[in-house]
Amino acid sequence: MKPLLKLFLQAIVIGLLARSAQADGSGPNVAAAMRASFEAKRQATMARLTQDETQRLCTQHAALPLPRKVAARITALNRATVKPPSDGAYFGDLKNGEVIAQTGTGLQSSDDPAKPAGGNCYACHELAGSELAFGTIGPSLRQYGKLRGNSPAVLAYTWEKLYNSNAQMPCSNMPRFGARGILREQQLKDLMAFLFDPASPVNQ
Amino acid sequence: MTRRARALAGALGALCGLGLTTLQAAPSTEDAIAEYHAMFGDENPAELWQIRGEALWHEKRGPRHVDMSGCDLGLGAGVIAGAYAQLPRWFEDTQQVQDLETRLVTCMTTLQGLSREEVLKIKFGDGEKKSELEALTAYVVTAAKGAEIRLPMQHPAERAAYALGQGVFYYRAGPHDFACATCHGETGKRIRLQTLPKLTEPAGAQNAYTHWPAYRVSQGELRTMEWRLQDCFRQQRLPQLKFGSEVAIGLTMFLAKTAEGGVMAAPSIKR
Image (cartoon, rainbow over all chains, first blue to last red; front, side):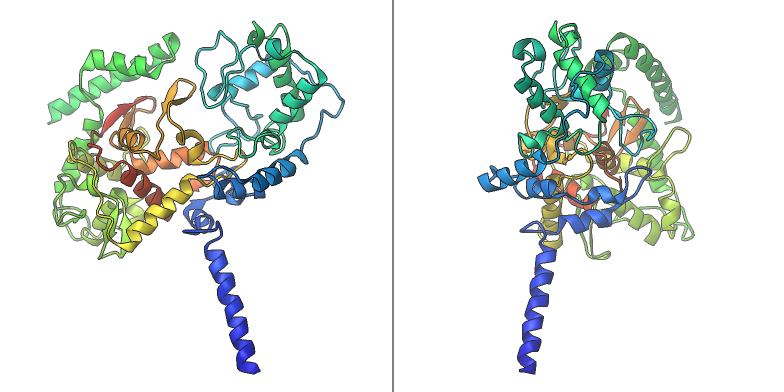
């Protein structure tokens, strides 16, 4: 029995080793290589290299269409993180919202951690017609509120999108601003005002 | 040589002034670079780095008091013509896949006897602080102008580096969930006004890879591929990429291999 038990245990150890060497399912152990290839720099700590389940699943399925089960798992995981505004009010300051949309700094090792992060919306989206330096990774949000109205459903949808993009679109390119602590609740409200206020440059 | 260097330094000073005026007038990078070309033709301040690198290459340096003519960049001792277009590659003596910059460190430490700490003290230049490594890189890269990118890819470690680089390209992490693929996985997209190359296809990878290292107008410095990669990760909100790390080499290998067939045009001028 003893040699058999030893063999059995060896098989388990080998199995575990193989699993850890191929943590992402196939090929090289990218996570281990990442840990070995970086060093903490100011606010950019090594903990940032560790993937949460959403990031791990999105990485694993990056090359192919997302299987339906995985997509459902990701949306469920992320929907659970969404918190509605604590006082029930969606709209903050329109002017602050515009500044947040324009600001690209925040959370980089080179940024001042005492300053609030920006949303950098213009990096990927068209918003106000007067701002011509907009990116195209995301869809145009020109006249966002004007085109969609401000029904409770539209407001709740937009809040959820800003708070956690993966609640609606698994593996979205858009950061999960509220859920990952990039923007504070007040900043999200300011962005809501920037998107919906009839006086906002977005809706001209 | 010194007269030419002085002329280039003059152009460089004018360029810094130019940067200020264009900042007020127009945000477009393409405009600023076009304006620069209109004023200075094909002069590229990167030549200042190249000239310094050429002098360093031929200078007898370090405790062993030898020049770099014994340095094998993959095509034989002292051969620099076209060498950059065939890197990264496996080197028997170090038993490692190396890019140009880590290979230069190997030569400076093993041939000239300089210490690794000394060589890596200034990896990336900053104004008065000049990097010898960057100068040598500029010299070797310039000697590959016109050469077609063609990697040996025969050693298993070279294939493993490529596979790792590919995996890293899609690795999402950090507070923003960014991977390289977030910005460089699709064609025809922009960040603000900056066009983004799709780096998983030959056309995009060739366009990017053949133009680095580059003189970066906004910084007044020549920047290498190692610098470029660590700056991408900074914007991804990740920690500091270590110089010569397996991720740095793997990503370079992935990009270079995808760019195969492209013709080297670096050092170029970038925003």
